[in-house]
Length: 304
Image 1 (tube, rainbow, N blue to C red):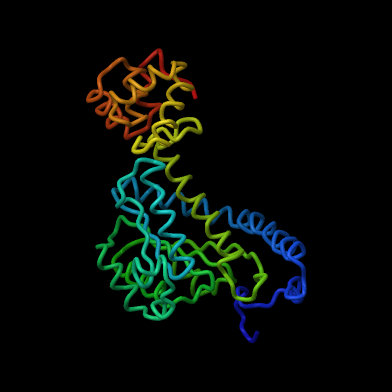
Image 2 (cartoon, rainbow, N blue to C red; image 1 turned 135 degrees about the vertical axis):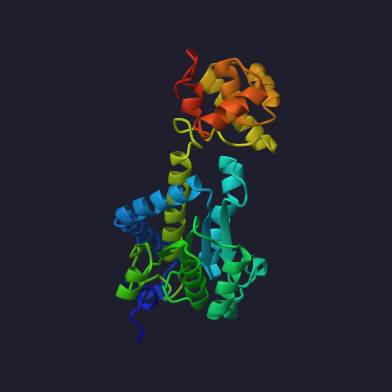
């Protein structure tokens, strides 16, 4: 394909996929997908370093900001959008920037990725600064919009990282604080990076944000205790967390969650420390939101 990028190479294992049956196509694609998790595992150290930088940003009052175009941009916006319902975060804590703006989430805006100045402008629009961590996402590693955004972020003093699915250049490695490069190999359909590269990107983003949220106290044991019961599904999940953690019946869990105005972590402190909502919130603030610390003075503290 006359292109050095791994994402643009032809895959010999799918060279005749257009002649295969549906069942054979499924087998080929599934076989390629099995390579993704191992490729992500190879980037363990870089992902660990990224989590640590994101935690530092959060602890300093900063944000995690994703920047991407096309599939990469959509995955960043998706991950950011999932943080408030999952971990009870302020929507501003994790942000996603996509080339072409919100319209690009549902309709392709391919030309938007070619303007580095638009990436820089998007960074300025969010008032990115010293305490933020900005992660560029571009499977091919070459998207001008992403590079423009990261260059502007670095000029403003932000720490930056890059997530790609091809071999990173020495310049890329030297420029950014961290580079994550899961090498998933050529796609089943040449250049269709919404496939293995997209899957690898989703896995990496899941690990980064989940790991960071655990580190800052958004999880107790393996329970998402910082969720806010804003719908029936989350109300049910919150009640079940209280029932399991506190060994109470559904009715008591419902009443406790209502008294905590739908916030599971607050409800756990109210029960464990035998206090009202406002005092529970104060105790959590004193413990920097870490539930185990807020409960530590209580002999009835729950053990996840």
